[in-house]
Each structure stands twice: as C-alpha cells, then as structure tokens.
Length: 546
Image (cartoon, rainbow, N blue to C red; front, side, top):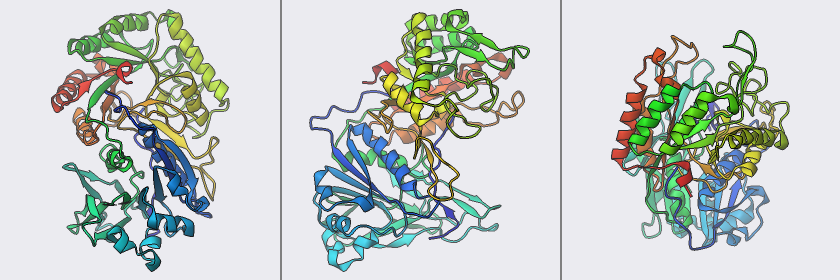
C-alpha cells in the first residue's frame, strides 16, 4: 500500500429533517454487531474505532441495538447471535481470528464486509469462497500512478455510480509534503456465478475507463470495495451506504423527502428588519422554519462596546423577543443554540462575541475547555433553558454551537433535550490525545441524511446535511472569504434524494440581509426554496419530525 497515502477520517463539513419519520417497524429492532480492526504500533491504531462509531450512528436510524467489538476479540459463533454483522476492514492485512473467518465463510446471517482483508477468506482454499459466494476477490487497486507536478491527479477508482448519480471520492495532493489526502484503495472483485452473486453498485476509474463492482451481494453476504466512512461529504458514496443500509438490514423505509430551513445564530444582536423579512417570506410560502436562538448575548471583550463587557440576558433583549414573538405565530420554532455561543472572556477563536465563537470546546487548543464536565455543560444548558422558559419560549431542540462540543457536552445534551438538530463531532476518547505518537485519538465530524434515533452519545438527531449560504465578505471581514452558493446547496439536495428517506436540510444567517453587505441573499434563498420544492421536497419544522 502506497505509504504516501494518508487514509484519514476527515471532519465532515464543520460549517459554523425531516419528515415523515422512518416507517414504523413491525419487527423488533435489529441486533447488530460491528467488528473493527485495532492494529498496534501506529499513529492511527484507533481509526477502525472511529469508523465503528460512525457506522453505529447510522445504524441508529434503524433503532438498532449495536455492539462494537474489536475483531480480535471475536468469539466463535458470535455472528449467529445477531441479525447482522458488519466488519470494517480498515487496517491492511490485519490478521483476523480463525473463528471469525470460519464463521464468515459459512454463516447464513447477514454479514457486510468492508474493504481490506477479505483475501484471508477468499484466497484460503479451505473456505471454498468462490464456489460458495459466487464471486472472486482479485486484489487491491490504488492510485494509477504517483502524483507529480506534471500529473498531479493520476486517478483511481473514484466514481461510484448509484441511482443515476456519480458520487466522486475526495482527492487532494499536498505537493509540498508529498502527501495524498484520499482513500483510493479498493478491492477488485468479479462475479463468477451469476446465480449466486450480483453487482449491486458499480465504480469507475475515469482516467483509465475501467469499471468494477463497488458493492457485491451474495445472498446475505455483502462486500463493499472501500471504506465509505472516510472523507465523507454531501456528494460522496457515504450516501450510498446510508441508503443501502435499508437493504442490508432488510428494513424498508418508504420513499420520503422532507426539507428544513433554520435561521441561524439569532441573538440580541440580530436586527428586527432581517428577521421580519425572512419570517414574512417563509410564512408567505407556507414554509415552517426554525430559529437557532442564543438566549444570552455577550460581548465578553467589549469588541463592539469600547472594551467594556456587554451582557444582554433575554429579559433585556427587546429586539430578539420582538422577532420571536413575530415569527412563532407564523410558523417559526425555537431551537436553543447554546447558552452564550462563546466561551469565557477569551477569543475562541475569534472575538468572544455570542454567535462567533465556540462554547463547549476549546478550538484554539483543540481540546475540552478547562471546566469541562457533564455537570458544567448541563448547567449551561439549563441556564439557557431558564432564560427561554422565563420569557415564555419553549425550544423544540438543541443545537451545539459550531457543531462541536466535548463528549461530556454531547452526553449532557442527550440527557437535557429530547431532540438535537445538528451535525456532531465524535472522539475516540472522552479526553482525547490528538498528538500521541502511537494510537493517537481522532475526532470525526459526521452529518446525517436522515434522523438518528440514538447516536453514540445517546442523542436523537434531526439532521442538517446540505450546508449554508456563504459569500465573500473579505472587504468587511478578511477571514470571511468562503463562497458557497445556493446552486451548491441545491446540488447537495439532489444527491440527498438518492437516499430513499433522505432529507434536505440547510441553514441561513439573517445578517446576510443587512444592507451594508449588498448581497443577493434573499433572492438566492428564494431560488433555492423554489428549486427544492420543484424537486419534490416537502417542507417541515423540527416539531413535525417524530
């Protein structure tokens, strides 16, 4: 395997559902075993565990009872105690237990095998793999060649064809350091008995013109050629896995596509005019919406108050209450977006102003904040709830500021709120060490195309999966130069529709309507809403998701 390749889990879209819930299941929730590799002696010993967490989260859409176990701890016959087993082959040539290989060769239960190490089963004559499963494993393929200045993108099997869409795997080459940021390795298989095995999904290498199976199925045995939990994005084969889980588990949710829009970072600093304009437009279109509300505004360092700390509790936030009181009877719902949406009297990392900084994670040091604990996080959540309740507002969900909090904060959210509405960052330890030379911890960001009944931290999650409007504001703020258009979000929504019960959920900042920015933001919002409606999405609010 090419040592230049750094096959990492990339934080998925840390940018800052809904509909009919999953079809009611008549049978008991599936009991699922997730097996993962745990090599030793490398920096990335925990990458298999990170993938296991991500898969476990997706399985929460099906109310699955999930056990996550290192594969080397597998006990003979364990597969037969579960409705389905998923093996995440993330470590090249990791030696699998003989008991697991023997059970994998003969089980009649559902077994889904990802990427590496299938050769230990397929190339061992005692298992008679080709004849039993009806397909062969022919080896691995990675990059077509090493990248160079003259050929920076030599290509690999990077295109997955599914439901008339081309899902293209992430690729970037860091020429300065000679590092490929991608996960190009795939397992090449071939059907040898079409009565036993079929190609469910195909993949292609556009540079060579080759095609090969991406997902092969032989009865209840599935093989996925790569690790679709690496380098995930809104147009990535991650969505293919999310949809195929219905078939792998035998749980068929009805086709349903719901859309959601959330007005983001609404605080005492938000203008009445911007919120009224947005409320009038959305209510006029009969589109329910949510308002990510920051209950307690603070400019801790006095950035906009002559160096003097400015605190505005909700009881004194006249404009914010006016905005909420106008929006709620017109289809708006409150989502609690942190307590202050900033941390202490410090820049974390920007200004210390509510809405600008992280609250429950020290992003400067990339570590939990000094006070981090379940009690500390829950205390802030309860303080925010008190601000809302004392002023007559009942939030329908929680949203973590900037989508990143500690493990303690996420568990506190699960215990404090019935529902969260967000993306989530997960850690391979509650107090992670991201700098260890061996077995360093990993943080993985995950978005969802559908609701999750319970994630790794116990949260029920309504997803935001499309992103948000971004404009080049560098003339006013030199750090704000990202551009993400309504057409980009619409393309994401088109890909999201490949998931049979996939949602299209995005957010929009009201400040983009302020006259000094001179942006076409309202027109762009209208274009996106109209296009998604025309695609067949049905608009709902968080409280409508059950």
